[in-house]
Image (cartoon, rainbow, N blue to C red; front, side, top):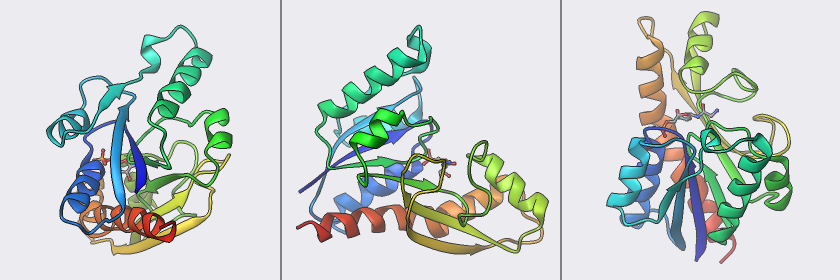
Length: 197
Ligand code: GAR
């Protein structure tokens, strides 16, 4: 069984997609061992609670320095003994020590077709605002391994989604989630879980 730790910052719709696909057997050989949020009071934590998954908050706001936050985050991650860490809308720069320790064992979902609209400053709705401002006719989502750069690691899966003429950042975000993200992330986890049987 692949021990999967999911890291979140907000609503957790990608977390929900993973929970649902484990529950219905689409994702196999996988145990969701924990959820870590960097924000207090987000809906993702309720989703974890409802699914009976251990969950906790590690927020930078609760620490005096970034170093202490980074050290605590890594210690809490280690405590779950994860085989795979899934960044499902986790909008925090991953500490260098964590990237080194979990090389090739951290994956991220990004709401565009990398290398478009990615890197520093491109997260959440900002990605879709930039895509619409540029006038692209196709966007999508990417699942990739996390390396030392921002959104630069090896690509695992991508899916294209049409941009419609009357799209707003919110409608585009919703379509990309429905048509790409909620499918790709479970699919990537299942691939990894079953390669290491
Ligand atoms: C998702 O669209 C995810 O792709 C994005 O944040 C959203 C989280 O939604 N991640 C990034 O922008 C990472 N750079 P969710 O909490 O409902 O899963």
